[in-house]
Image (cartoon, helix red, strand yellow):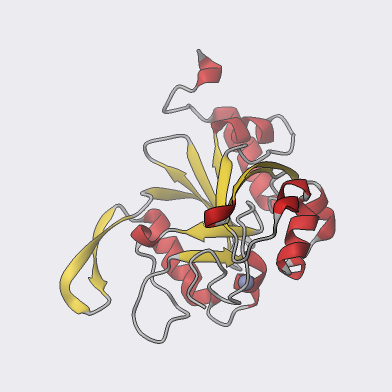
Length: 232
Ligand SMILES: [Zn+2]
């Protein structure tokens, strides 16, 4: 299945929920280790599928390179010429542990925690402060837009998160029920002609203990590079 809203690995529905499933947008030019011919990822990935995939190490090394690279020329799908210009995240490593690596932005107050098994999550200044105070950071409450692979009818607005995943037949891809139960899911809107579902999922972020320890200490000495509204 080539639906970009489905998981690249299993082909099933994959609504993004931070810590469980992420979207990789095509313009990022991250090479697709699951493809038979050279191509770039433009899809969603269930983290449970990524962790079980035999290609996870190839993805992991490509992803780490992307996180750290600035502008760089890379080989296109049709060979070395003409090269494509990829814009990486330009982060630099600040921590390397048994379970994960942590990278920090040079230009904004952003961090990426990348597990050695593949999954990743992003953190901002407000989340770093929560970790520094000993709390559990929660993902931003931004609206996510997801195109359903099939129309779920009018009741789509009545589903909670387990109900939505169950209706899509993908509960097993979001497999830790206790962790999933802590996600605050809120339906926002549904546009049936294009099957576009808008929702908010505020997720308590599950960090490896070694990452939590490093970031808690880091928060005590970190000097923000940008001002956010909390500072005004
Ligand atoms: Zn999957």
